[in-house]
Image: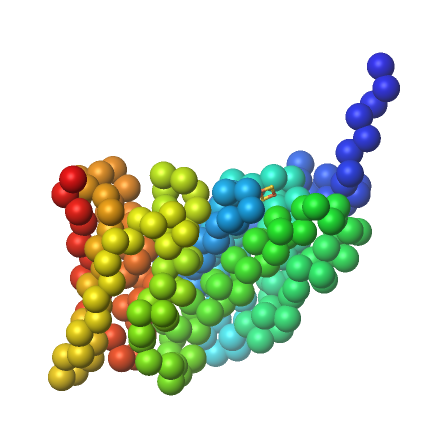
Length: 219
Ligand code: FES
């Protein structure tokens, strides 16, 4: 029987079979969950950053993606560990793919997904630590953009694309905005709490936001 020829380089296969830095850091300084609209897969990335040097001291990923995605998660966490957050931001899908000796073109979105989880986790760190001083006011558009990073656990795609958000209302209070988001799930749904937590995590740190209220449709 002839051997099946895989479209992957030796290094991709090696990282796929033996991925580095797999898992989840408890109490991370930065965290991201990214999903791919192209295939419905998901990557979670958590990291720890040294407050003084701004170097990434620990980084871990979990992937529900394909071999390209897992290999890219493995290589970018290796590349990012020990780097400062500014250096790590420069890791691109191109440099990750080069490091792996190339990825099949059809799988480009898989490595993009892994790389954007790294960028998003760094951004999450910067937001939580007040490094990004946001000047952009929180509008409905901004809320929607942030919610594109929250997964709908029923489908693996984001909550905006899958119409899981039925209403967004923004009220201006005297000391900040009150954002009310209605989710099209019953309150006692097994994923309701997860979705609520993720929505709040994505929005409540914004400078002009006082409170994020997540409501459910009791249908
Ligand atoms: Fe989904 Fe690669 S096909 S991550």
